[in-house]
Amino acid sequence: MTSTGYTQSYAPANAVDGNTSTYWESTDSAFPQSITVDLGAVKAVGRLVLDLPPSTAWAARTQTLSVQGSANGSSFSTLVPSAGYLFDPSTGNTVTVGLPSGTSTRYLQLTFTANTGWPAGQLSELEAFAS
Image (cartoon, rainbow, N blue to C red; front, side, top):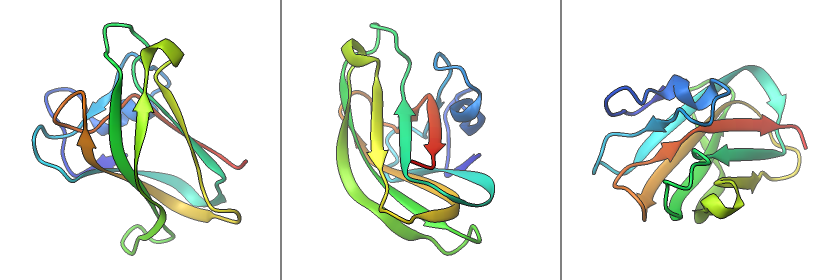
C-alpha cells in the first residue's frame, strides 16, 4: 500500500490489515489524495468493498472518490469516475463499488476529492473481489 500522504500514525498499510478499527487518513486539507494497492499480479476484479470504522462515534459522511487501475503501477486509467459514497455507521460504514465487467488490473488506486465528515480521505479496509 502506498498513498500520496497520510497524517500521524494513520498509514496506508492500515487499509489492508484486516482490522476495521484502524484506518488510513490522508494529509488533512490537501485534496486530491490517493491510496494505491498492489494486488501482486494482474487479477480479475469485479467489486471493491470499502470500510470505515464501524463505531457509532463516527458520524455518517459522504466521501467523493474515483477508482483507477493499472497493470504497471505508473500508467493508470479510470475504472469508475468520481462519485459520492455514503458511509453510515447505522449500516456498518461499508460501501460497495462495482467495477466494469471484465476488469483486470494489478494496481488499484482510489483518489479522494472530498469528505463531508473530515477534511481528508479516510479508509479502514479496502477489499477487492472477483465478482
